[in-house]
Image 1 (cartoon, rainbow, N blue to C red):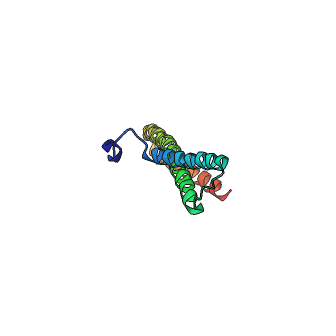
Image 2 (image 1 turned 45 degrees about the vertical axis):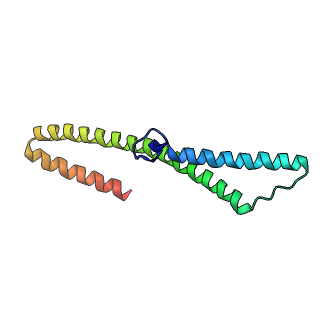
Length: 119
């Protein structure tokens, strides 16, 4: 049980809390149904039940957002690495171009990027 409280573990604490909260909501429902069949009214305050609803939604929502963020973060890092590799290759190509032609190419590139920004 103490493994749950460590920063590095294989358990997702948010999913565990969300599942326990959802299980208690189900227990409330089953007990209320059973008591209704017997003819006894089960008095559960709305704010207690709503608290379990918010804990469940919050736990599963945060856990889901973390999954999406991890996938997006990995894609972003991959894109950054690829662009760095392309930049290194361009630097090698750029070094082979004579300096007089580099000035002309820089002005063309600058003009094209300014045109793209204006669009």
